[in-house]
Length: 367
Image (cartoon, rainbow, N blue to C red; front, side, top):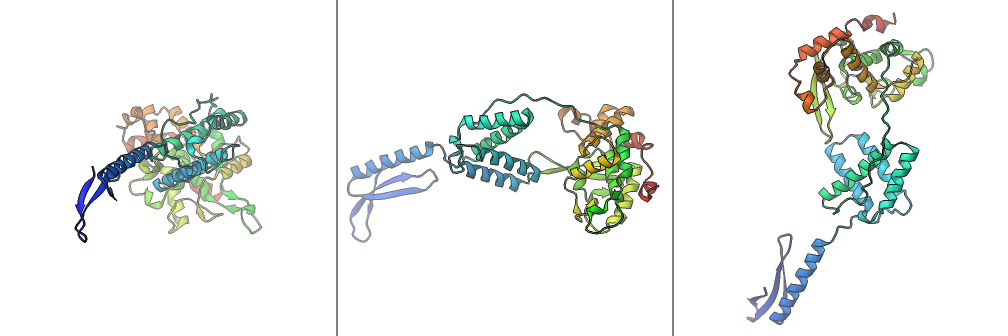
């Protein structure tokens, strides 16, 4: 309601319109009559109401940028960030899509055509991955109060043809293991004979004896290796970008291998260092492909070794609950079975792998 206030200089009574703003502030304006002040209050409140009910008009490019910045700040893995950038770039490159257009005005048909093309040329799984990232982009925008309403890009999921993951025979793994300690001279700027790389055997052994994921072993530091208690700590990336750890027992063979690796790395922080780049490994997928080719076996990757480790344990009659403990699967069912101690899993690992591994000293010497 309009108010009256006495002017200190003139002594006259003046009339002001007054309204409370949504942010907690207050706005006033002087008028010659109370009717004018009241009219201004009504019109201003109406405009504020229209503005508060108006759908945000953040641009598509701005929404993408803010989303990526927020995920980076949370510590989401660089691989996930790269994947999202590829998806966003694909959408921005579609005909009829402009970076400056409001995010909510991107036509549904444009997104559908993008996903249809991906399903046709790549796979239904790839199309669903793109769909997932676009849906999460919109839902994040809603939580950040940048967009409102239902996602205009909600395309139904595509049919996926699940292919069974290739798990190499155990003998193929050991073939790769045997030839993994030699680096061709082409890896370096010098010429001559091949260079020894015994750390590769130790690394493959670590993958086999811990059933670790690639990122877990590549980020392993010496501060995570507890020789006194014969265990090591693996850090796992969570969905929210954070890290959580589990202590994994070391088999006797892995203990000996890491002792040798400690002498090789000296005072460096990371356990496994790429001798070509002199930095910790990032993915090493090409390395595994080349090693498989040299060994004459069907190519397989690090995650296949994790599956192979589980297979070896199960074939050795290790109970399923202990295998789930070693693999560190996070679910209600598997968590309920975590009553097994590390000693139980250590015994299971040594029982399964004790007679399978070539002696490390002989392996590193090439005998």
